[in-house]
Length: 101
Image 1 (spheres, rainbow, N blue to C red):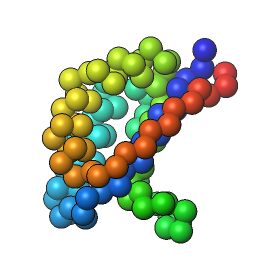
Image 2 (cartoon, rainbow, N blue to C red):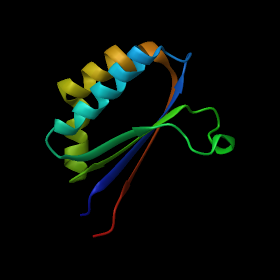
Image 3 (cartoon, helix red, strand yellow):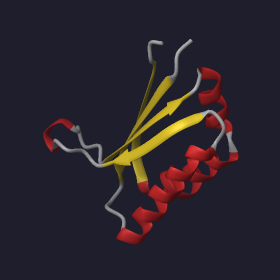
Image 4 (cartoon, rainbow, N blue to C red):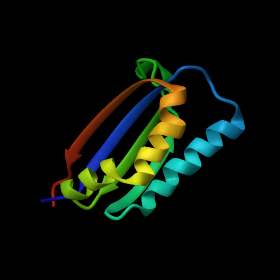
């Protein structure tokens, strides 16, 4: 089995202040330390006309599907969701796929 790409799109309730946004990005970047996570990037769209209202995207790569499953239930991930995602996000879309080896 190949690596797993995990993409999450976020539609914000309202634009947070710069400090709150940076705290959320920092918390997400720390998720890279969860075992099995290879890389994690958060960014804003470059072409607004295609976003369907989503404000930020997360692109992450995991060593395997099992590692993505462990990440999903990890304390670090749950903490980020509870403290940064749920309070600020009105909609989320996630999409996962396997990279060919």
